[in-house]
Length: 231
Image (cartoon, rainbow, N blue to C red; front, side):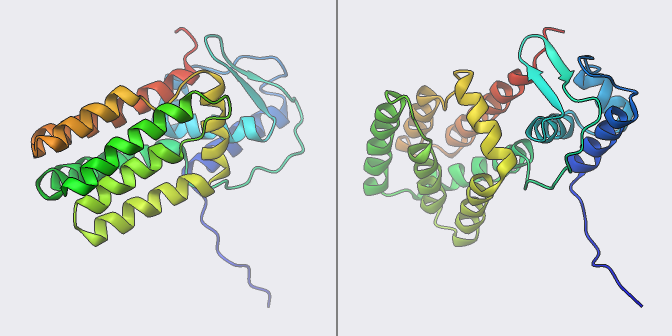
């Protein structure tokens, strides 16, 4: 008797496989524009972020092309590529960061040290220097967020937030997407980081929570704009 290991698939992979099968069967032909993100989400009974992550996976596999401002188009009528689980999707990570980092920021406002505030100022200067380079990375952005998590003085929260950033950095799906966003001219907002720092300097938990929420909401909206077809 042969037994196969039980594998669980992320939801975006299941969605991507359904669309890939429609392409293979010819129901979706090469050059055809896919239905809108909203329509796909309603027909498949999933969230719009799941649809976005499925589209990134399909683009990574060379099955579709996302044309910002135009729509999503089929590239290959009979793809032979196998879709793989490329790690946790960027929108799932953003959702989780929104919940955890906003609360970590509120805690940090009451607990952060003067030394850590000075370090955050230095990191913002690093971010400004990074953005001047054509190969700008997001190392300073990550340092900024991880330092706030550390300033919450809650080791469990700090470890989880660090793990979320590591997930993002290890995920092929997330790395591809971040690279595409940079090419579209979408970068971390330095002004939003300054607002977070000002709230922390005031030792105001509510302002700090709101500033972090607004920052991650705006990052999510900016990332979602990559899929905007003008409809």
